[in-house]
Length: 195
Image (cartoon, rainbow, N blue to C red; front, side):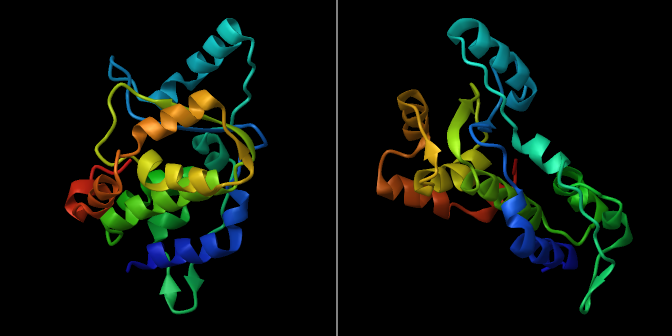
């Protein structure tokens, strides 16, 4: 394992409770719309639609917002491990998650993806109140939403799920235990598209 990956997990063990949106503010999303636009770029439009059509005024905090507000002061050394210098300048968790793989060439594709999955899972594990789920017209083969977030949502007793949200979630889950097991057991190479 790379030093960056180990040091991230040391940080995560201490600070995972900070990866949290406010109550009723968690939103998970995956995929792109029919025009090829990633859903995270459409969230403001979705928010306006919900307000105009349904009188709902969500003030959600997507994972990007949460991670951008989590500044980190990486220490060069931690025990025998040392962060590569290019990683030390990544001062918030969003920049770290997006750019650590380029900043540290020893960080593997699988480690970079696992960092995202850990951040996504804790974002959902720490959720309270209502959650919002958006699915694009096209999903990546192994979206973090399915591999990391939805399994955690199903176990989180601190959230309230509308019937529509629950239906969307169930629709995304493979329709049998065998299919689910095959999906999760597929080769690591097949998951390299990542987030």
